[in-house]
Length: 73
Image 1 (cartoon, rainbow, N blue to C red):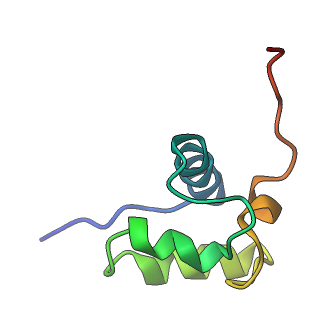
Image 2 (image 1 turned 45 degrees about the horizontal axis):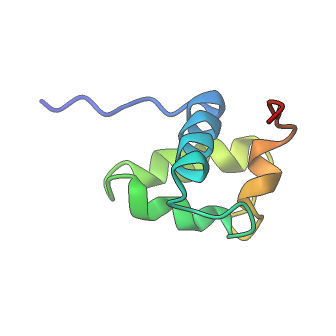
C-alpha cells in the first residue's frame, strides 16, 4: 500500500517558498499554480489543507508566504 504524504500548511508554505526562490513560480501567481509541482493524487490533500487554513486557490502565492525575511545585499 502506498502511503500518501501528509501536507501541513507549513509544508505547503515551505514548498511554495522554495519554488519562488528557484524562480519556478512567481509570488503574484495564483496558489493553484502550485498544482503543477505536486503529484495529482496528492493535490486533493493540499487543496483540503489550504481550505482548512482559509486560503482560496485563486489567492496569490504571496498571500500564502506571508512575511518574508530579506537578507542584506
